[in-house]
Image 1: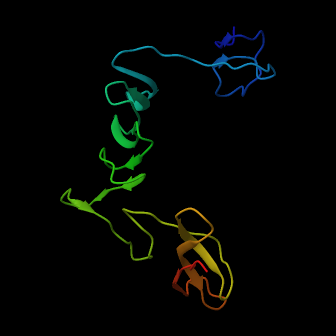
Image 2: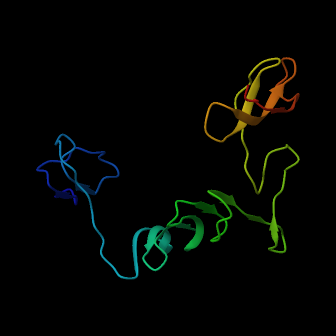
Image 3: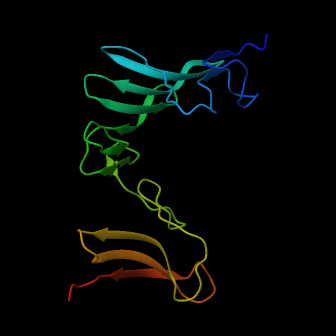
Length: 171
């Protein structure tokens, strides 16, 4: 009578406002899942009254890739068969590839006038205090030696900061 579909349980155990399909008993110590079979693509689609496919999570069999689409089925992110995450591109350069575009559609990375990345990676944190580090990227190759790039705050004003480059030499 509520319009819900329950599979593997006798009564609803989920959120009343969003869980129209419930699979498996959350109190059971067994695995549950949904399998969507296809030799082409399998997808979970999201719709609204103006768009039958406003977005989707699609698995493409030919490339063994999980693709996340929004705004009328535009690809936004791809997890490829090598475990690479590609944002704004279908071609991986490394484990994480983020590609933006300028106004003419050419690849570009940009910084806004507030200093935040508009077409790249924005690594931020809350106010850290005078002389402290935040918003860091860390690099390592086995062992304990690490190198990094971090923001450093100057004084009590969190808008006064700079970059510091850190290395750790083996002894």
